[in-house]
Length: 440
Image (cartoon, rainbow, N blue to C red; front, side, top):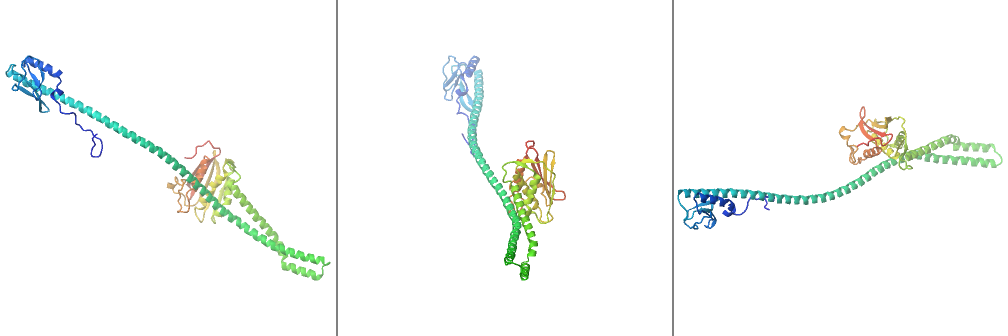
């Protein structure tokens, strides 16, 4: 099929070959007209082709046409396509000449109309056929394109699924790294907290060793004197002087304090380890009943080293019902909330933790007096990798982990303004799960 300058298919309106008179004037139309002309006085009238060959006749018994017989041209598209001839043997006169001219004009008009109708029909047929061919070709092209797009869509769907799984695995690894980083930071702080009491416990024990050596020395002297069979005045004076040189009276008074401080230090270490174990819930697999007030206290206990100097931590706790949850996950959540609050400002920090029950939900809020969260960022702060800190200061996963923990418990987490300035993160957790839609 022909194409245009841009390669698009087009229809060319060119129909058929040049027509002869017999092609456009059927005998069924010409014969009645010649019969009527014969009756009107044109006996023996003939229709001939451009070469003079008879095409149709009136059927009268008259001599055949000759070269000099009167004739009138029948025109087709302005060109002679034949003619009407009156044989020499037929009657002649002005009437016959006029009828012959009228017959020629009538046949010319009939030929013109028939040709026009034929061209119109053929043009329409050609357009329809070619339009149909174009539509079929377009349909084939679209079918081929559809198949390619289906294949591409199938391939793309596989690639998207693979990429989504890859991103999910990467996200899980990053979240795990964030948790490990938090645990690592926490462990470093706990190690520091443990080192402090261990340092003075060790020092006290070393001092107690010296004291013990002196007690043993004076006891050995007493033993030797007693074994001598008596205690002379000189021996008593020597023992007194030696006791004074060993400062046993001061040591006796100090030994009790050393032992008390040592026991306090070991108790402090025991409590830190117990809080850390309770914070991590390493002995618990899955859900367990938990008092969230107690879990917040545990988290604060293991975060002592992270609390800025001079910061005020206000606990406004209301007794809470015990709920089934993953305590270790919630301690991770509280750790993130408190760490965000502790980083809100360096001086004059005030963090208020409120708990309570509202209807069938537990409500927990962490409020600070830091710079707050701009309104245009509140819909984004829970997105993975979103952070307002400097590059290298945070991965932007802390609040994402918190969001996942809360929503896994069918709860909600939102950020509000703190009266007087700052940010307040509000957690609402159902007392009984399954009765609320998760946050979207």
